[in-house]
Length: 419
Image (cartoon, rainbow, N blue to C red; front, top):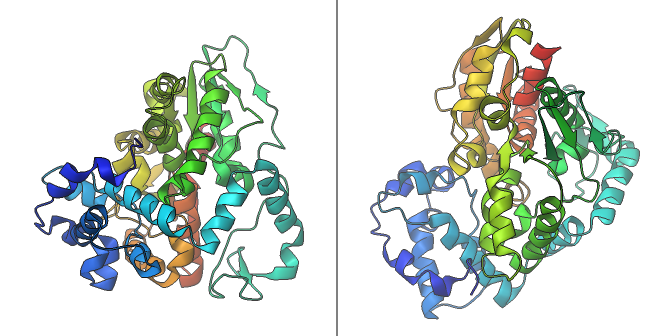
């Protein structure tokens, strides 16, 4: 029986006492004011689906859409696994009614690395036909193209990170060797993040292996209930990374890290030959901030001044998801010359949430506005974060609102100081 199956969650669903703590913390509810947008309302719907009282409709499937930010999980006094219930409900909706067309297209692209490569490289070469320059340095659509014409997106890199980097980057006398899982955005959109990760690891005395056969972590599929394909991708990565002679696997994205540390374990829990390997892989997977603070610390004597005023946005999947909260702040605090001004709500969701940002653009942007106001109030020149999807969201809002601030990955900030 799948971990993400409603039939295994009757007790957890019944444990919701409808107290409303989730309502007070849900960013989606705060924008819509709809009871069916909050966790307790969706759990009630999940109960009716489990009982067979209500059947699949597109409207019902829409009710289980959310940001998967875990704010409700953190606020629940009963410890209800709300995210698991939602994912199981989405999986039930996909089994009964199929995935929406956009998500079917996403699944087809993400499970085929060659197709994904071709799509991104073609888009990078032809971007001038479909996008026009924005004053911020980003791009806006010339035509709808399935995108809101107000959108500001970063220009795709003409060369992917993995194409521009050797598969093995070694250092003399290395004290360790890790595999780097790049994720899609660091590979296609922010190669500077990938380069910074390798540089920081090398300067920490660690050699880096970047497997060419890696692909999307599968999180967008699992989060949208497309579990069969997500499980195939999990098996592929467990096979690949378990077969490498490395001390650890390092990621630069909380969502990717969650895939390796949690979702693969859950998806493959009952799969012969994979359950144990998935647990072992999870145990040796680290976010880059966590790794260079707790496992292979960099030499603080090498740090040089970076004269900049910064603030920090904590990604939902990195903070509430993986529990990596203190390490990025310790890295920021160690950089000489930085003027750090904390946000009022550093862990408030930015509203990106992957495909949610495409399917619910106005709600996503309204959620972002709260974060932008918080950032503006710090007077910071740059926002540091540990997630490239959050970075895209923040950069878009900063561009649209004319705030004139930079966004950096934590690894990029550290690499600047280690130069």
